[in-house]
Amino acid sequence: MQNITTVALSRLAAQERAIDVAATNMANTATPGFQAERMVFADWLVRQPGGGQPPGGAVISYTQDRATYRDTRPGPLTHTGNPLDLAIGVSDGFFTVQTQRGVRLTRAGHFELSASGTIVDGNGNALLDTQGRPIQAAPTDAGFSITGDGTISGDSGRIGRIAIVRPPDAQSLRPEGNRLFTADKPTTAVDTPAIVQGAIEDSNVQPVTEMTRMMTELRTYQFVSQFVQSESERQQTTIDKLTQKRP
Image (tube, rainbow, N blue to C red; front, top):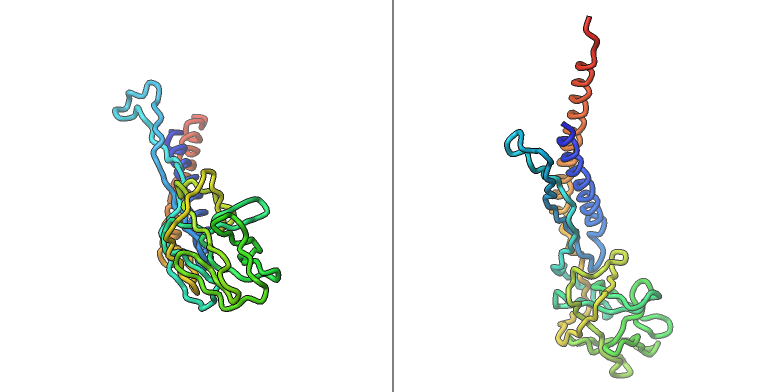
């Protein structure tokens, strides 16, 4: 009897995680460069000792939260006209920025010119060039021109070339917040990144689809929760009847 409850509880725990993932995706529908996460479920098989009766009862199949992976499909582009808004044309390329914790990868391409002339993201992290150095322009530079290969020029001439890198396995990147990633293995340069100037890659979360997914996960959670409650009440009723004193 107890096996029924434990199997249901394993699914309940997995569904709770699935709802959390869907909620995070929904919260980042407007986050530039955000990549949705997806759940992978699997069966966790447990062989019962002496489970020959009833037939077919030798193995119990639990639900296992196997892994979470990112949907690496690029999001749609929004053309802003801002010369320092950049989108990467290749789906597996990333900008590199210098943070206080080290170099991080991102597809969020909203950049601006700091007071010192460094090109930075919204958190003040410097955008890096192909030599791993912060891209430095003159504070008075304007009219930035950025070609598809990442070469950036200003009023004073050529400034540098923006680094676009490719990790060996995008799924191995560790997220830091909703826009940055840490690469544990060396990355390689992307020679033809097809950078689009004046545009930002939006989140690849599709709000209507994600809302439908979250509602489905929530209904499943509610159904399993009701089943666990009903099974608990059934078992308690059985115990009460078995322990009643006969007249």
